[in-house]
Amino acid sequence: MSYQVKIDVSPIYDLLGSFMVYVTKKWIRDIDLGTEWIREIDNTLSHGVRLAILEASSWPFDDYDALYAWASCRQPERSVEHFLEHLEHTSESSMWDEIHPIMPSLSLNDSIRIQRSYALLLKLWYEHYFHQIEGQIMPLITEDGEEKIGLLDKMEPEALIEYASGGLVVSPMPGLHTVILFPTVHNRPINTYCFYDGVLLIQYPVDVPEEGEEDPPNMLLRLTRALSDPERLRMLRYIGGEPRSLQEMAHDLLQPQETLMHHLMMLRVAGLLRIHLGREDIDRFSLRQDGVSELQLFLESYIRI
Image (cartoon, rainbow, N blue to C red; front, top):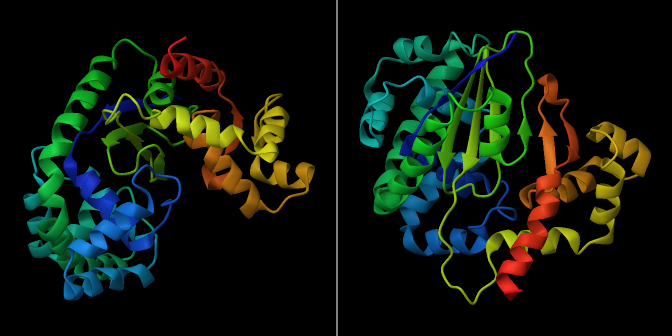
């Protein structure tokens, strides 16, 4: 049984994504913003605001599943301010009811804890950081979202997801009826995704204009960094035959899964791998041949061959 694809364009997702990256520092080595962005935010926020926001660094990472679920279940026209007001002032039972159909295992007590814990901190993040850059983000995600919406009737669901995400492969699976794609800027170039009951939510990065013609484009830098390590080249050769799981790689390549995940992330953000999503974290990786072709194109374009 197949699924339908929806495109959801809202700066609320970038609000959540930027907050999550700043607080958890997750993927910070792999996104374009990098550690310099963290230092800039640290220098911008007051000491009190920074301490309040970073309190969330010790909270469960799974809390973000609920926050993203509330974002996806909101009224379509709801702005960031309306979303934050809704999170802060809506009754706890109503907030739980909103996402219970797609998160049936989330208890009322956990829903209440997440709502109470994050409502004020996200408001602080919006007031002291996000509202200043929201106007720059909106044109980028709007233009990209409109392009993807225009492709809904022209591409098969699997092809559209792989195109938008640069390599995520979502085959039909039991119980999955809706895939929601949403564009963001802060997490560029990685994808994040979350399985709910019947719904898969996928974040994908939008293209951001490069600053100067003399500097190598970010995509070329990612490709050359990924291919500069002999271990990653050997991994590409190994993966090139057929899709492989992390467990298979650890067994065959005799390397710890943590080490392999670092290499896989480098290859993935460079556009050299496809990820075949599966339930229960059983994803498989295969070679993305378009990424291999892009290396020559970016190199020739930059050095003007």
